[in-house]
Length: 170
Image 1 (cartoon, helix red, strand yellow):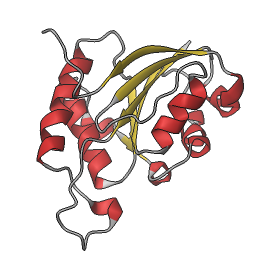
Image 2 (cartoon, rainbow, N blue to C red):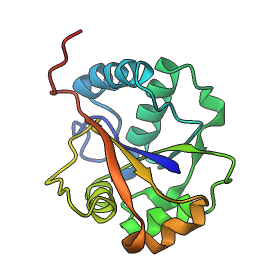
Image 3 (cartoon, rainbow, N blue to C red):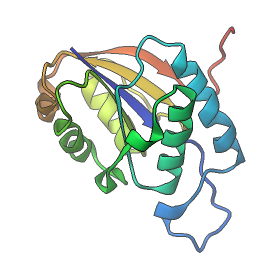
Image 4 (tube, rainbow, N blue to C red):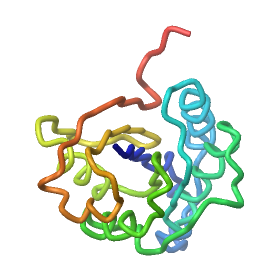
């Protein structure tokens, strides 16, 4: 059994329209919600053993903030440009190269690819849109990460779905 945590980057800024999409930073709300999601993750049962992030500024900053909240060394965050505006097949290709000693993997990337990936893995659950800083935790009935390339034949189930506007009693 492997566990995949899908984290959409926190809210980004459109303030500077001259910036390339890849270089857009987090806005105020993103800087506020990313640590909240990291704090929520820190008290859950599935903490990532490895984090792979898109190289986009907003995704990487989200990964750093969340890593800090869960005491994950940000120097161990792997970056992969192929996650920038990736489709599920591209994301699966990145995931498939993970070391099998890792049982809990976090992917920090973008929509619509992340929502599409979650929907393809969780055949009976359909997300309309994973919101910014939204986190989906999925159990995959696989022993090796390269099995994710057969994503339509993998048995998966939803462990948790959390996002900033979801109310918590804590």
